[in-house]
Image (tube, rainbow, N blue to C red; front, side):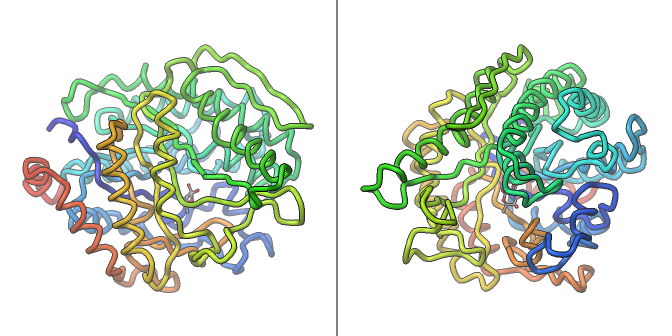
Length: 438
Ligand code: FCB
């Protein structure tokens, strides 16, 4: 089966859906009172570690041909240098299960969580620790490369860095911008080295399209605008934040040189040989835009009077077009690795989806090379510091009874219909002919 020209799919991450990920830093963080806004914990999450086959059936039932999932490093390598064969086999079954259903897996190696042992060694603050991640990438490439062609090394290095080391919202909960920059630099370097390790260890072309590994990182592309257009403070602040958060990080991922600076703060410059040419595509996660102002207590706010989702983020599907146009300037093909809305009642999502997909069509028609759209998310899941409040699923999950059937939201059908209109009859046939079980 050749790689379909366009992936239509959904995205999830291990810690948010699997349940029982008790060996990573997030698990410990969740136990500390006050860290999760609604006081919940990931716990059993969606119980997807057990229910993965049903989840894959849901994806197939929607007529999709792509699934972005992440591998939990702390399951694969529970102690430094010790690999858990059984965990690896479970992931292998999932990935083979994708293929058997005509679904191309897109596999993320790092999605915010760190093994406890890695965090104890200083985590991403220590440049020397990058070697651990590189080794893990090499291990995965060798063990799973025959079923995976599309890899995402790191999810949102900039969100991880700023949330964990500057805003204090992710473990280890620091508030130090200089440390955050250093962590982001280390993650960017890790992307380069992990890409190299994957290219060396995964030489198997899983789907026979002539490409054994296509690698990218997922960038959280957020639109940042001045809160008051007439304020020079707001204009400068939004420009400066865009420059560091969006541009500098993406430049490193696509160009090879790390140059991160925050006005009045530190500057980190590094040339990393492994980064040059490390990305085959740029993963784009788009959700919303924020209004920026350095004046007042809250630097980022939703636009005044704008409709907001359940987490208070402006509902602004229109922004995806600008995000894609800006990302395309870096010269790589784009893969939309996340896009979605927290909307428990599903009031806004159908329209959000239709609008977003129309704009993706328009971006493609204008000549932007987009390889796929992966909606966040298949299921409601554990939304980091927002706990159970951010419900992004096409399917609702009852977290108190995660073994109960997932409940389809109207949006799931909307998405399936929109995708069916766009998929060529030949591609759709490939998915429907795939045998239902590995
Ligand atoms: C992204 C994260 C993902 C999820 C969505 C809502 O920044 O990558 O795990 O939390 O936001």
